[in-house]
Amino acid sequence: MNIFVGSLPFSIEEADLRESFEAYGAVDSVKIITDKFTGRSKGFGFIEMPNDEEAQKAINELNGATVQGRAIVVNKSEPKPEGERRSFNSNSRGGDNRGGGYGGGNSRGGDNRGGGNRGGY
Image (cartoon, rainbow, N blue to C red):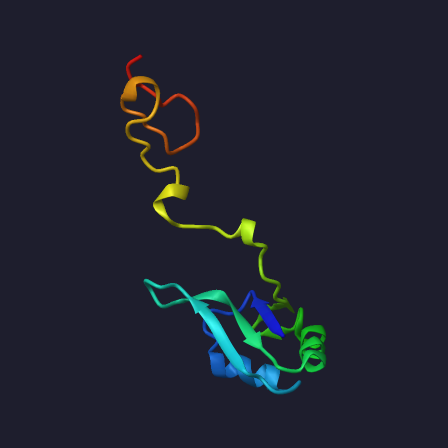
């Protein structure tokens, strides 16, 4: 079972998190999510436990537990349906939309606040 762990203290290490969950059973993997630019923890992570019963017991016992002065959130991680995933390619961010509108002028698009199309007619 894949388990989400949130509201983690920024100073917690993966080894510490593994130790907390191993008290309930075998742990396949531990991953604390970090910012790709700074390397700093984002305050959440994922635990993979092979035995669903042990994983559920860990969730029940650790959800709301205090770790280094913070109440952590622990629950089963469910994958998002395909349509709800965010895409970061240039087509999905509003972008520039050059050449759009009537007659091709300078379509300023991007912020979805209306106005914007200043092209010729």
